[in-house]
Image 1 (cartoon, rainbow, N blue to C red):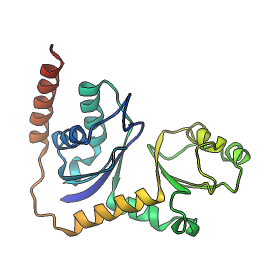
Image 2 (cartoon, rainbow, N blue to C red):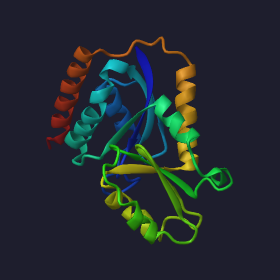
Image 3 (cartoon, rainbow, N blue to C red):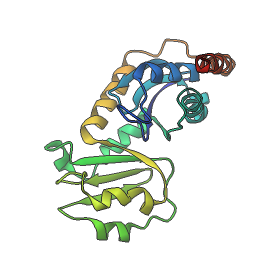
Image 4 (cartoon, rainbow, N blue to C red):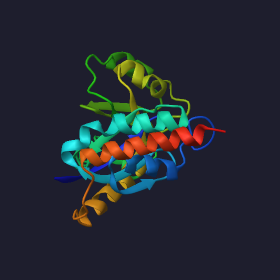
Length: 212
């Protein structure tokens, strides 16, 4: 069964170290078995369709492809369309619509086991608020996160890695995913045997590119 997925990368820069050109990102996704891929801006956001039974292996395959070709391995967060819809619907800060850059949703690699929310709350200032809901952490910062002490401590206090997107970007990615799902799912997606051949081909290409 074909489903619509969202992939978000952590620690990808627009320029300089750990930068990932979108044409390469697209190539890595397709080699991992993603179909009908669409990317959004340069920070590592994409929507695609794939066979639901093969979804669990996507993060590892994408990370391995980036590591082989570019020398760094970003955390890869994979969401089903339904998961992103629930995260947006559960937003506890309705004021975000008036200032969409004030709210950030951090999508976590796993559900925090023993988050230290008390310590994080002590760091909040300038009207900052937060809420943890499973694998989604909502951080509302009316004054911005550039100088926020709490923002810099989120992963440490939660005990898990994650990647954050502001409310505007989250909404745009959700819109893209919905449009992709609504446009039809008739395209055949690669099966696991095809994925292995593609991964092997990508590895060979990467090795050749590394030669002087």
